[in-house]
Image 1 (cartoon, rainbow, N blue to C red):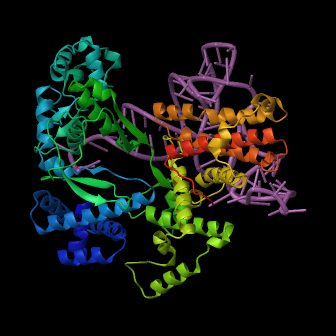
Image 2: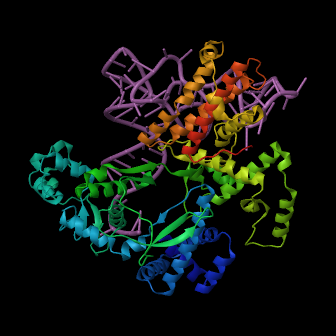
Length: 556
RNA sequence: GGGCCCGUAGCUCAAUUGGAUAGAGCAUCAGCCUUCUAAGCUGAGGGUUGCUGGUUCGAUCCCAGCCGGGCCUACCA
């Protein structure tokens, strides 16, 4: 739908032709920004006159039909925006392998197969009365369980449901649907989920069920695959296609699914799992995890700082939901640019020899020439710089943003605050990276390898028994908990535990770092002991950071 | 109407699933750079864990009822 709206924006609002759009894509470095603004404008344009919504449905229809100008424009736009998305995510070290598209789910008849399966197994039934008359519907999980508990589930779900409805006495009347009237219980289940509308079209959830049956290899159909994009590191991304290339990697047939989708999708996700379970694939349904997390919202203060106008009633709220339709949100690339810029300034402040004046001169020159395709302004130019300071700044800013996103537990609505997200001090990614860099620096100056330090022959018993022994033992203990914490993260699908652990370990190490000066330690054996301590903490910190996708620069 | 989630220091969040004096960061204030990088360290102030009951030796956590906020549900994708 968003693509359809952007198509409407280009054709109706801007009267652009296909070749105009091609030219625009070629000459704009951030075409997605252009579409973001256009999408918000189109949404406003619809508001002005409801008649204009016809343009959207026409576009949707044409796109679905295929083989026409609008469909080609849609293809151009979605391809260009998708490429931009891959680039943006790559800046955060996130790579994709395969991009399945809804259009192929439709055109390769995934839904038809799933529909057939679900009718056969009695997962769906045709409603003949009530408000859902004429639809194919599915019983919601809550009622399904009740029916199963009444021990009628030896048949198909539909037969069990019919038997159950014929004998309401088998169910506990008080634990029922929230209906008090006995007679209503055997009426049509108005709460059932509509999968196929009365006009014969399938809804989003239906397509999602088909898609997930494919993921588990239960559909009996497959996508066609085409090469879509090759990352700078040569990793290849594939995209779904009606007619694919003959040689392609194998996707699908998975043993477990983790769907990382925000909590607003909980209901449709439950419907998909339920469909798979009712089809008899209980094993697969048990390995289907909706990795649900709360949404990111803007604090009113942050929204005002970003220059958005905030309604009076919203100012008192603790957060406001972001909205593409309203053009209200923060763009990831902007955030990354700001973070990299800030990090680079800090790197140079600490390492003045890395200051590269020539880069600034080049960027300023290009900016003055208005060479938009290469550079938007001096600040954005850093995106493409590869000098040492910029490389480090990228690692640090990625660490900062990844840590920021992971430090919140999944059930917490992230009240996004720009200054918090760009912070490098306190409980942040760079704080942890800095601890590792400090350890690294000690080994560099000591002239030994961390692995060597761990293998050294040390009288541990003597040093742990000394005055500061307990405190250092606690540091070892905390470092030793890392594997357990990582396992716990996986078992509970809660990455925030890893983030918290990494921070606490870094914090305790910084403490140790200040209390015990390693390189000037006179007692040779104690020096080895302290080095081994630094080595084990460094190793465990890097390990837990790696789990979070955070790497450590050589210096910072 | 129904379902799910949240309410903890001025702000943003934790609390290892029911355990000891509820902890961090930010912000504020006071200290620490001729010693391995100050993106750091030390200290101070800041709390009736929304309210009221219940279960328990013990409750931020479990139960019930209120108050306040959010999200999802109603043949859109």
